[in-house]
Length: 129
Image 1 (tube, rainbow, N blue to C red):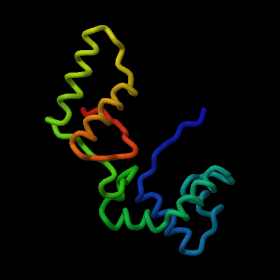
Image 2 (tube, rainbow, N blue to C red; image 1 turned 60 degrees about the vertical axis):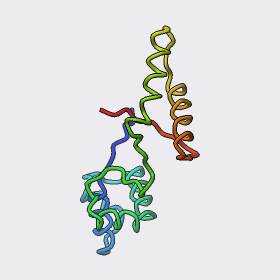
Image 3 (cartoon, one colour; image 1 turned 90 degrees about the vertical axis):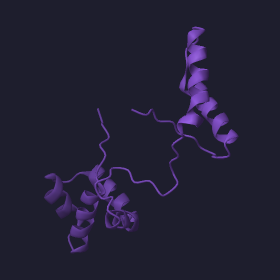
Image 4 (cartoon, rainbow, N blue to C red; image 1 turned 120 degrees about the vertical axis):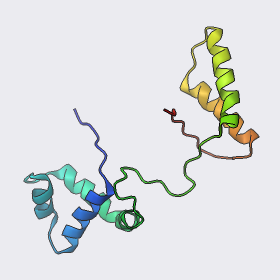
């Protein structure tokens, strides 16, 4: 079974630097991954080559250890006061015995976001720990 693993930008930069020194993909894969010929690694490294500018900028900005770097303003964290109506609504629905799905939570969050003036076309939710 294939399992996706996230890779830090620093590692991507090391691989790209090695290629920039004049090494080909086969040498690079052998050096970094100890594999003879791996088609999936070639595909992955070719994708990194297309995103080389972004990878280098991410490393230069001090976020090289990140596994997924977002552009500025890509994520919004709601304040406690904005989050309160969502929590109250979800708790009320749960007390009534209704299962709360992610789509219900997303709809409630979109409603709150539009009420406070943050218009987003795409809303992704992540639980706070």
